[in-house]
Length: 441
Image 1 (cartoon, rainbow, N blue to C red):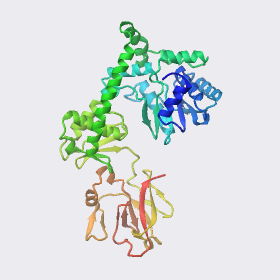
Image 2: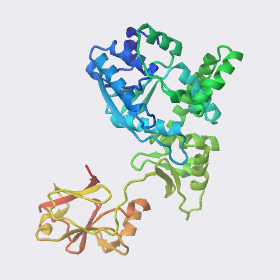
Image 3: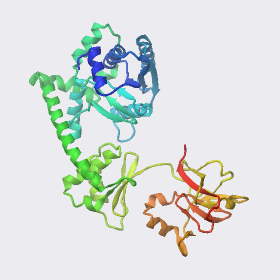
Image 4: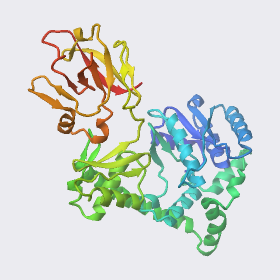
């Protein structure tokens, strides 16, 4: 894209950008040029917000934030500073930790139809592709950064990906822009800086035009990835259960090993997980899918676990667990009762459910399964153990312990919002409540 207002306007129009626009603004030359160009391309500047991410890792970060705030004010756009903890945890590089912190911060800002713009350019794309190559990435990694991708509820766009850094510097000098030079960009201890300052100059001396050649290869990889991914997604959806978000293992194992890898990757991509390493992928396919029927293998990955139940593959999000020893008294059923795992119980008027008369002058308690509980159900004879009911309903074992049991004067009246005891079930034309169990607001 040429660095003109008309070209940027055409770009935004082609991606149907017409609402709130966030710009990742570090104060460096690239993001300054993008913000300056955007401010001169859009009539409604109130729709533009420059976002400065304060990592707290550089001594000059406070001054840089003030510089960015002043620049945004001079351009007539809104400004927002977000502080993040960008320190690396075990297994993370400093670059990865900072990048993850930034993306989490930006994701939290995005609402439906919002757009985030990054100023990454041709040189950034070249470095990304080479770094992915050195890390042994597959087609997706070797495709480089896409122009458009989803971030949270909104979209991330990179309008300068086909713009050279020389063009960006010429624009900045033409308009006499003042930008920040981050000293860490010269530190070759970081992989990207080492590649930029030590490796690429030597490569470009030997192979002139290597940048365009690598980017052309990346485009070929992106095209191949798109074709294969489209086919794999269709095949994956044939094995996918939308309600449980699980994958049929038996049918998966009928495929050859390469197809299995693609299907699992597409499943994880469908669940908005990042692409797994080959080590994680092998653990899922070998340790989980091929495990003994009585085994309960688990693979930890990106804040969740991958598990198997009834020959299906599940992604289980790690959430706050219920305090199973807790016994809560529900003093006022007209108000929702928030539980220790951040779910809540409430009641609503219904045509069927627990008769309202049972709630009058009654002690209402919430407990969790301890073992041996049974319940009688409407239109079914006998008493049924909770274990059997959970198995009949195909409720995975890791979800069972968190189901709240509603007791009325010491007797089980309901199991979450799934079953109601026949003893408390309302007769025909009798006023009643239905139990609602959901995430707490």
